Image 1: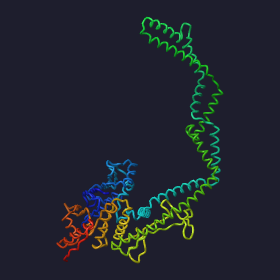
Image 2 (image 1 turned 120 degrees about the horizontal axis):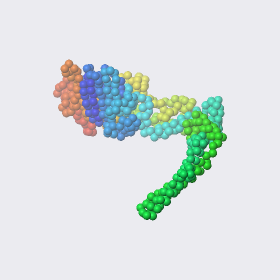
Image 3 (image 1 turned 180 degrees about the vertical axis):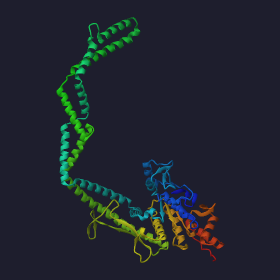
Image 4 (image 1 turned 90 degrees about the horizontal axis):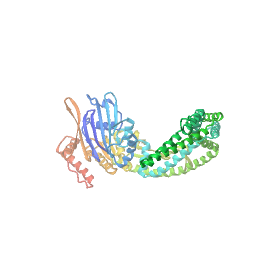
Length: 593
């Protein structure tokens, strides 16, 4: 819900900071005072059109910021968006949206203090507010939303989800069929290509790690002569000695060992060093053995070197085609083999998938028909409820209908009807194409909600729908901009009661701009909007009213201030309070003209 709104240098508003009640909020004031400008500011905050004409004259920029308190249900919708973009706020149940418009035409959008693009702001803001009277924010005007509302109203979400799962399965089966039913020439070419690739990889008989081993062996063969010379010289130094007068490392270590052994006999502190020398002697002998064995293994073979070069060239050639490593090549071969088997079994797979597709079309048809029948029943209940609400709002001749139709589709699902089987278009929502239709006046044809011309009628229809669908609508904040257009005081009390009831029944926050005191009397928070001229400049001010201030405002809205209008204002507040508390409304006061 919208907890707080800050507007700065927007149109004639210099600076306003408004705190809203969770229930029913009303804004009143003279025409042109700035009430609708506040709604325009909210619209722009939600991602609406930003025009530099909104910037207050003499200012460089206009700023709007809204603080929203999120319920658990709305958090389930909003939190994944914020987490995906790393936009989580300091408090999980608070969301701060901001919009700034500058004179140069640039505008900046912010979510929890971070700059974002306009589309993301719109996406995050969309579930938060419906503004009735400005079509771009009316979710009930959208056909797909209307179907979702009807399903929630009738408690059909589980049926719909089960149907959607089967439709997704059918879509997957058809995708597999499409892949298998490509033209025969392509399949024949693909079959030859895959057969060649699989055979080429299999004939190579590659082994993981083989390339590294071959490179090591090639390196030894290419340097065999130098390796033989180095190992020979090393072995002579270790065991034989280079010349007759020069002892080997082994002989020298033997002499050292003998000398240190004698020292140890005279001084036991040399025992550790004696053991050390003896260990070195054994290590040198082991090293000499390794060198000798390595020297004996060196056997230069030009034919083996050629074999290795050919093998490495083969691996290099395969790597260029199938992957950067032997493991990649082998993986490519496995995938090619799987595709080859699928193509080889193409006809059998096609027949199997066709049978599965037909079975799904019948099964989905049964589920969709059951869902459609439940919707038909719920739509009649909904229509009766909306017409009853409209009658309370002085539209007793209005006719409302939730029209459901099916579209034929040869590739659709099979639905049993009274005249036989019918193939009907179906998506994840089912076979129904729903649209809310309305005829506001006798003799007028039923038309979609979006085609209703009168703003007052649109607002009242939206109010009636919202009242009936309150339990199904998750939008936390509903704004009605001058819902009283075209209605009088007698109906105004009903409208006010319904707006207050909407805030109670559906756990909604309601904001209403009104000129009717009968509506304003039901407000739980009443703001008076006024414009003042100071220093040659016009600016908007706002004040929360209570007690005598509210009486004075309602009396002013009734006409010329007098004891009579004040009494009438008190009566309006008294009746509203009686309705809120469930008390019987007392007889009206006798008012003089």
